[in-house]
Image (cartoon, rainbow, N blue to C red):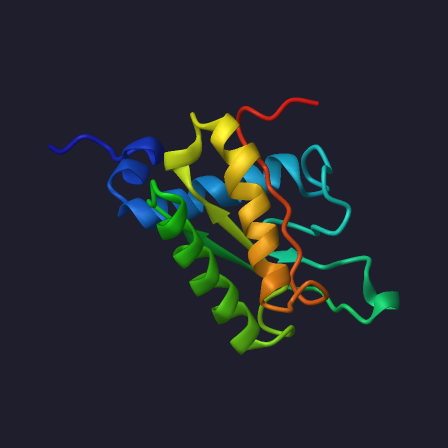
Length: 144
């Protein structure tokens, strides 16, 4: 008889993008949401953000999860803008936030913090979207 399939074994069988989404959503639940550490007061759950901002005209809406295998700054910017354009095209009711995982940068904190994060912010400003899109970055090596 076949051995029972455990949650860990079934997670390993997921395609890489689905596995990344599942792990990233679990991280949001543990760290950002009220069910976890509450690092973000606007994250209601791993599925919804934008809560608590209604008085500013922002309605809670689903979180979109995106994944990038990009190891270069240029490719990461392409993946970021693909996700951001998808968010903008869908409208505020469809997506409130994008959580973009980029595991190729997990061990590259210095480059992330000196180059990637400022470029993401600068590209949003250069596109004239500073009042529409905000960049918030979390990195495994970030320390306060």
